[in-house]
Amino acid sequence: MARGRFITLEGGEDVGKSTQIRLLKDALEGAGVTVVTTREPGGSPGGEEIRTLLVNGDTHKWEPLTEALLNYAARHEHLEKVILPALNAGTWVLCDRFADSTMAYQGYGHGMNREVIRRLHRLIVGDIAPDLTLILDMPVESGLARAGVREAHDGQGEDRYERMGHDFHNRLRQGFLDIAKKDTVRYEVIDASGDIGAVAMAIHETVATRMKVAF
Image 1 (tube, rainbow, N blue to C red):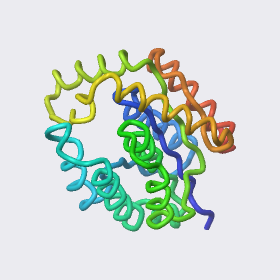
Image 2: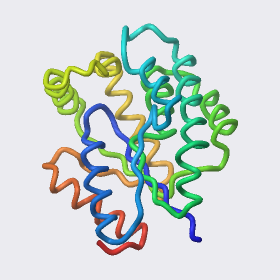
Image 3: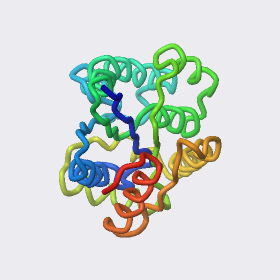
Image 4: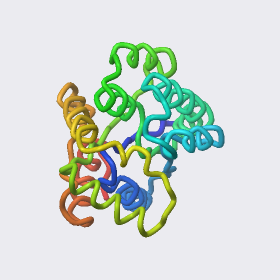
């Protein structure tokens, strides 16, 4: 049985990843591909418990290294219990965030030593990597405005990172763009500032070309 393909969507706050993952899943399933969607932090029972610690509460409650360790603890559970079993069964995995978010949020956003993050990555993840990473990009102000509307609507309280200020989010955005520049084979930057349909079309065209699948 052929191994499944692993696609991740990355980007700052409220760039539309969750919506686009749902649309991509529908398109892939329409093409006959078996797909599972998941997210980070989270994705497994233990990972979801760790997610609660990370995305709620005071913005200064964790040191950057603590955040990175929590993310990699959740990622280990996620890999072992969800991602790798699915890929080994021939299922495609679409993941809302993966290890690039740790480098962008803690390495760029919080200014943590990036070599420490790389060492954590080698220890926990090793040579496992997405086949394709789509970085959804839009101006910080637009993403945070969307985030405010969403939080007012659903009131889930998962807004810890959204409250970290524009300087943090500008560093975060630049981090994702820098990461993408270092590997143009795996990464594709998608302009997420357009309407949902236009963004979905750009994503589907990229996946069709890179993953050799016909929608």
